[in-house]
Amino acid sequence: MSTVRDGLPVSEGISFGRIRVLRWGVPDVPHETIPASQVDEHVASFHAAREWARDRLTEIQDVTRERLGNLEARIFEPQLLMLDDVEVVDGTVRYIRENHLTAARAFHWRMLELQSLWVRTANPMVLDRLNDLEDVLSRVLRRLLGLPEPGDMSGDGEPAILVAQNLTPSLTVQMNPQSILGIATDQGTRTSHWAILARSMEIPAVAGLVDISRIAQEGQEGILDGRIGRLILNPDERDRRIYREREVRIRAWEEELSEIARLDAVTLDGQPVALRANLDIPVEAERAATHGAEGVGLFRTEFLVVGRNAMPQEEEQYEAYRQVAEAFPNRAVVIRTFDLGGDKFPMFLHMPAEENPFLGWRAIRVCLDRLELFRPQLRGILRATAHGDIRILLPLVNDVEEVVRVRELLSEEEDRLRRDGIPFHSGYKLGILVETPAAALDAAELARHCDFFSIGTNDLVQYTLAVDRTNARLSHLYNPFHPSVVRQIHQVSRVARAAGIEVSVCGEMAANPLGAFLLLGLDIMALSVAWPSLPEVKKVIRAFRIEDARVAARKALAAPTSGDVTRCLVDGLGDAVDLSAFSGRWSLSVP
Ligand code: PEP
Ligand code: MG
Image (cartoon, rainbow, N blue to C red; front, side, top):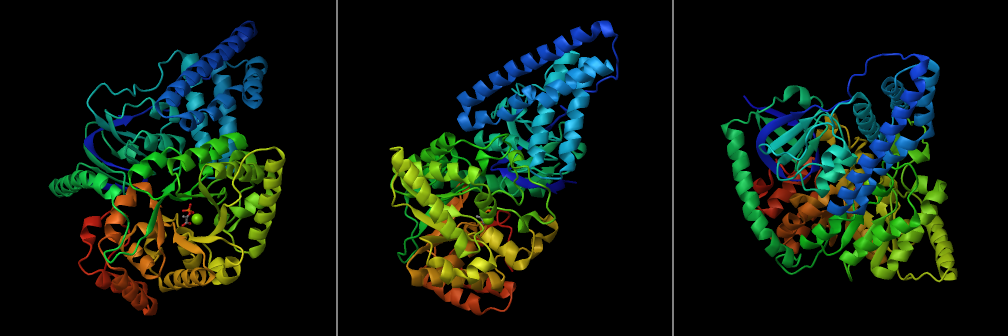
């Protein structure tokens, strides 16, 4: 019988193959003490192992830079810093000198102490750091104990789906995408460094599968679906058929894709739609462009801070923003300022744990409190305005005062740039993400201070329904077609039109065929979706008439329940779109 496990989709794509279980973990270290006469020797071998690890990591970093680019190469910086961290180095040397521990034991102890300190902060962001710590720990220990480096990732053997408890950036970057067909792990999230690398390397991956490394067996057959976050072990004939068909569809689809990318996003009756891409990292810009994006509707910038030991510099930010702007000449590029907090906390903010992080010190609140973080970002974005149609998007805004304050800061930073003779284009736009009921209900007031609105339905749904978007147990309650959400979207759209400013939607809802149909029916003519979804959404848009969408949206607005809303949309769409073709991809059930 097949075993089906669902986790977090972290890198697109479907793969079929045999399972290879990778056990790399931290090696066991015997508890040994040494005579005083050997202390100096162990201190010296600890420093030598550090040196060696630094050289090895630098080598891996260089290979990464060559293969994937600068951003990916920077992923190894926290590890390099850890090797020189005084807390690590002095603590280890002290244990050798004062407690007469072997170099391996002393280093192991010191790292475990730091690990337990970080674990206690109970902060999800720390998970990525712990992952880096394990990578460093394992590398140095293996050197001190004379063990080989973990697992051969070049994969000369039969191509396989790799299953592991967790991965590290250094293991991932050494993988050969020809032979590692997919990755499935117990732990990890979309922002884990190894997951970012897997996306850049186009290896399908699913994380957060809890105990898959214990359940999966070497050589077993598997199907991994990185689009919906599923791993099937021992697939039966039915699973195989479904996925074979899906693969055939995907192949046919890939052929169609390049054709669709060249077509306009326009409804059957000629209504043009601005279909843009959501990006998590700059390298995705090129893929978004080849997938037919008409600009970037949401460029998330947290990649610049997640897992970093220090705040990102203005120069690095400018380069990243400019790279995306240059990929889209004469098109809108909407850059969102740091959306930190919630589930993303960089170490350097020294954030105390909060009871309710999603209702806490998050997004614009953090930026306005920490201007040493915010000002360099605003300057980096302002400088990028010289290279394209840059728009600034502020997350989690509730109050007019927040927008007013950002305008003041921008004007101060513009003055500084002028004084320093640094070019920028002052005609950029400033807008907000409408992602709380407060912003939706107060849209008329906010519209007087904004150049555009973008509705962030991912958060708007969570805050409206009081349903944590990350809680799998509540996923059946997380419904963007709830009448309260539909009415808020309608209200924001109406207000924006009356104020003469653009309104778009950049939440996942826009990538759902029923969602796109509803949003266009509510007169929202700009949608932004994850870049892999662009062709599918474009195909949907081209299949219906805007007039039918408007009629269905009017009915949906009067519908009493989420089920009724969905039914109005399914009926309105009729057979214009084959919804079954999207099965599995779309988490929202069609009644
Ligand atoms: C949203 O909230 O809808 C959104 C697009 O932002 P994020 O998913 O990054 O919170
Ligand atoms: Mg959001």
